[in-house]
Image (cartoon, rainbow, N blue to C red; front, side, top):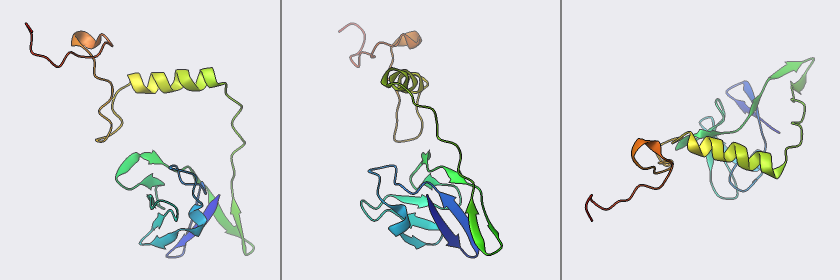
Length: 124
C-alpha cells in the first residue's frame, strides 16, 4: 500500500509496480503521476492507470483523515486460486480480444474459428 498527497488530496494505491513489483512509495511524484524507481513505469495517481497502457491499473483504496490519522480501507485478501483456475481465467480474457492498442489479441481464421489465420493470399 502506498499513500500519496496530490495538492491536498490523498490517494491510496497498491504499493507495488505491475511490471516487476518495484516500491512505488519510493518513486518520484510529479503532476499527479508516480514513476516506479526500478524501471520507470508511470501511473496516474488519480485513476491508478499506467500511462500509455490504461488497461493496466493499480487498485485504488478509499482513504480519509480522521482525528489527524490517515485511514485506508484495505479489502480482505482474495481467496487462494489454483494455477488451473488462473490459466482458465487468462485463456478466457485472451479469447475476449484486444485490451488496447498494444494488444492486437488473437489472430483467428474466418468466422472466428480460433485457428491462426493464414497470412498467404487464397489459392497459394
